[in-house]
Length: 74
Image 1 (tube, rainbow, N blue to C red):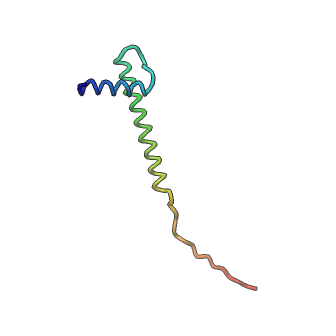
Image 2: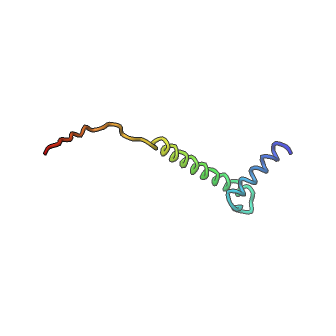
Image 3: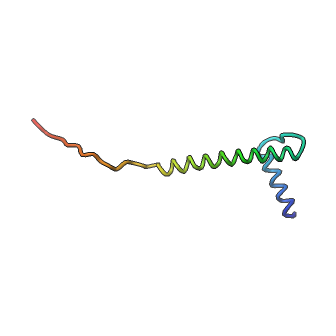
């Protein structure tokens, strides 16, 4: 199996994983698959950024304490 045929097989499987074939024309279907791939990548990047921000601020506690005076009187 050559390098080009392996790429085609991987691309075909990826395109099928994205959803059904958009049209009967292979060129149009490939274009739709690229658009779906870009949408998927944008979702993936967004989700990674959200999770990274959540992890970064997981225990983000403000450690500035205020002095509270307590007086005991009877």
